[in-house]
Length: 144
Ligand code: RB5
Image (cartoon, rainbow, N blue to C red):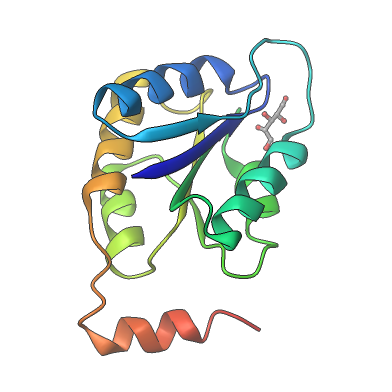
């Protein structure tokens, strides 16, 4: 799967761990930074990842900041982007099955690296339940 990943200074350690994990699993991951703990602005990264996902140059996006909240708010400003901030695997699974979420945001200050890895694994592996038409109807109604 083609995945684009990014983080601000609050999420770059976890982002690096997850990028390495996804690459080891065979995914094609484009890591657009950040690569240090120097202070950065999370919307700059969220907008780049959301633009790529909306354009279809990446199938999915992964964004990490301190909480995952700012990244989700910014990414969800983009038409066609359905970003979900997850701290548990149940939400990760159902955000794929029911909402066709195409961007996952995580908080490095919220979840440990083990739980984050499980969340990412479920989120990547779980398909959208597109054959259940009620979900397609609802997802279509999200766009204004
Ligand atoms: C940075 O301190 C922090 O505000 C940012 O990483 C993120 O949590 C914002 O939502």
